[in-house]
Image 1 (cartoon, one colour):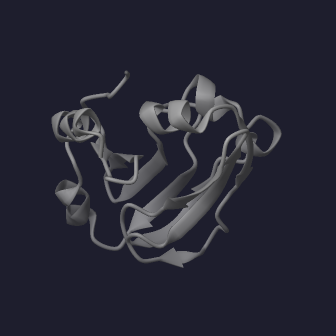
Image 2 (tube, one colour):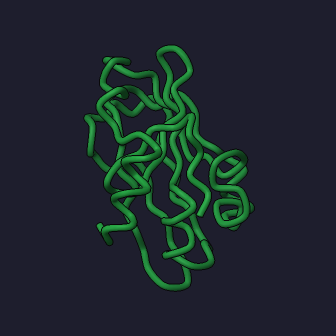
Image 3 (cartoon, helix red, strand yellow):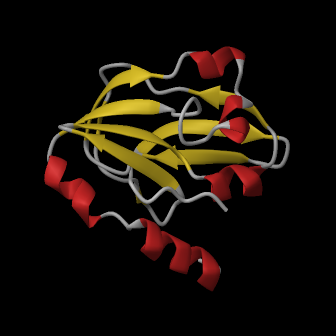
Amino acid sequence: MNIPENLRFTKDHEWVRVEGTRAIVGITDFAQSELGDVVFVELPVIGKILSAHENLAVIESVKAVSDIFAPVAGTVIKANEALSDAPETINQDPYDKGWIAEIEMTDPAAAGSLLSASEYKAMIKEGD
């Protein structure tokens, strides 16, 4: 299971890469493997203001439809439009090309309260 050390994670299996005041968000390798083949991604609207834990996007796979939650509060400034034509990118490269959105964080320090890679690994091992 690929769990990069430089990212932060949520209990809902989203990852966050912090770049200054921005958070790039996607779903974890564990989440994409549990979902199975991703066939559709409903991307967030640019300019949407979100609270932490608010619905950010929706991913549809051959197994399920899953809500993706904003790990931090802020404004959506980018969405990965490439996923509209190639949603399977989330399965193939969840931590790089399979990112979902970029959020300008209201409080960048809040990302520090998310799970570290080791905490996320321990959570998965416990079975959520």
